[in-house]
Image 1: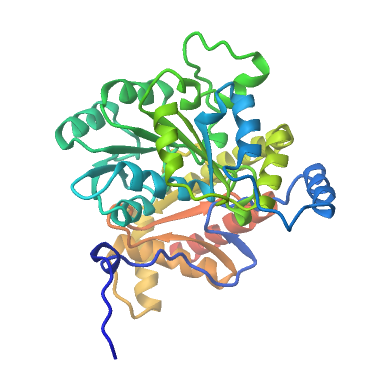
Image 2: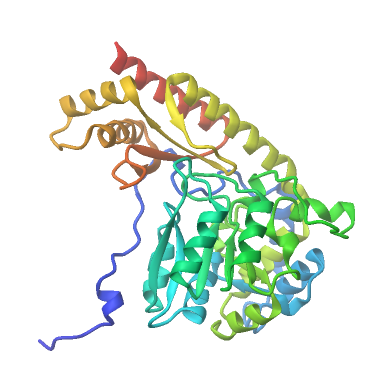
Amino acid sequence: MSSFTVRQSIEAMEEYAVESVAADIIVNANESNYPLPQEIAEKITQRTARFPFNRYPPIKSENLCEVIAKELDVDIDCVKIGNGSSELLEKACYVFGGPGKKIAVPWPSFSMYGEYAALSDSEEVRYPLTAEGFVDADSVISFCKEQQPSLLIVCNPNNPTGNYNSLAAMEKILANVDCPVIMDEAYMEFADGKELAPNDLRPMHKLWLVAGSTLSLVGRYSNLMVFRTFSKAYGLAGLRCGYAVGALGLVRQLGKALLPYHVNAFTLMAAKTVYENKELYKERIKTIREERDKFVDCLKALGFKVWPTATNFVTFRAEGELMQQLAKAYAAKFSERLPEQAAGGKLIFKYLLANSILVRDFSTHPVLQGCLRITIGLPEENKQIIAKITELCAEVRA
């Protein structure tokens, strides 16, 4: 049999994997567990009835670019659409990276950043977040001066810790680094930010779109691109749609790596319908924030350490006596030997899964050892999850 060779960067990679098992409550991927708002679902159904499936989509997704540009008061050429913001991240690494170049990414953060860097034959260089998961602007600026990356990625709010970093801190970075900067704001809708760029002249009804976000800085910095997604707050994870808004020079270069007709027409239609009716999500997002805060309070009351979160998920772990009790229970039940902190998180993960609840397991992560990440689901789902965690804690403490 002939031997085949592949690119060295590909050969060294592992496939991206998350837990994929049947469960009654699925809260492991930060999707929305809510259905589409009824009014939006009806509009999409009506448009589907007369949808031109036989025609190619707009070659550069102009129909969706136009409504986003108009809403944000930017030129249409400053907007690009991708199959999820993930495609845009991958293409940005390809455009601005390459052999001999470095891409600076946060750590711990979204694991795919390193994969995108590798796919572009770039060197991934990690800048550390604080112990609580925040971005230290001065540290990042110093890191970039030392490492001289060709691209800097900032995840705000950060995944998987959930931290929101202030607009002032993000602007400080933009003003003091020389390379293009991607502000990955996949979870920004949940942050409820209040900050605005000085002298922002948008009308009041549009300010909520950019408050707390570096979207308010587009047009002021030539090194800025902001990436957003329809997968989280807007509940379109199954259609894979994201968008980039930023400095014209950067966005034009990004667009060169996007293939013609690369986003399918149905996705564009649904995303456009959602974006035109995004006001319908305001109350839902408010509910998710309230449910998140209640979830955090319950976990803290049980004795868990919880990372500060401004997203639709919560990351936590057991420490101290509770960790020891969970680890002891794990060792008594399972033959696998794990460090004490990892064992505590693994026991909770397995216990929830045995009760048909699927969460994200970070228990063996090198920095977040013992951690689990749980997406905020429907109110009744959240109650069930907390009830099961409470039940387990009572068992190991007995």
